[in-house]
Length: 251
Image (cartoon, rainbow, N blue to C red):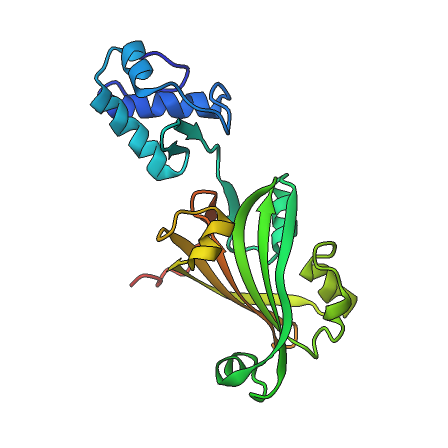
């Protein structure tokens, strides 16, 4: 099995084929949105059996590079959109930094009471009003995440009149002189409600990545609490670690 990509010929045949197909995806021979050759065609091309081909394809499906479509074949999803967990920035700016075209669809924008749960998060009385925003975020026209965002009404008093499909929340914060300085983010897995799963274009019952984030301004005030339900097949995330150069560390 020959390809420009370095292949370990001592590894199992299905892993060799996996790397060959991965190389063709990365080289653009199998572009995103197109179907790769059928299992029969790959088996004939490389002189191996269909079960071996299926194992190689299944591995790439699990990685999120390929998707099986019932009755149609196996399609290329392309490379994942990488987001850095250490960089404090909104969805729009993150996508622009990755040379993707961002867009959002506002599903809900309303006021609600803080209640006991959010009163604790924002350190406000339970009767305080919060803005609740639910939006669908796209990159290059593909749904990437479903976000729920809560912001105290006194932080951005005139949010009702601002078109959030035109201005990002970070731009809105700038309008009011709000500077986010740090955030605390947690990661979990969650299952979406059927309607939300359809909007995000994920299979019903399939887990998505759930990022919960509490953002603070320079005075330590909680400005925003958000939950982002993100497609794991479209994004991966990085975290950077750095040694503290302490000779006693780890002892």
